[in-house]
Image (tube, rainbow, N blue to C red):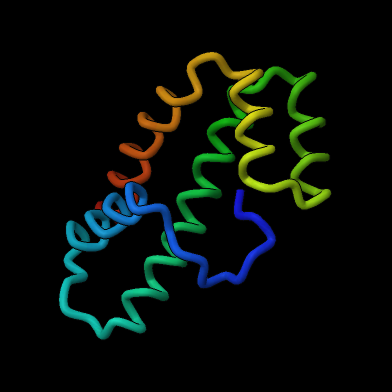
Length: 109
């Protein structure tokens, strides 16, 4: 869901805290800042993929293709979120549940 921006774009502060807790719980604590930043970017990308896959599973078939088209055309995060919110009534609940599942899978791996 990333906008067409530099890959080192700042991560949302709320998401940054979540990702940091994933690294910490995984035992990744004392690493150089550059490595930590790269790990955060990589983990953010993995979380984004995880969330999008979980949403695709919940979308009705008629809504999956328009979402794919939005993503293929390089739609920004705001446009994709607007689309999802209009089609998935409990989107925030799904995201919250899937973030917990992501953390369990990441820390347990």
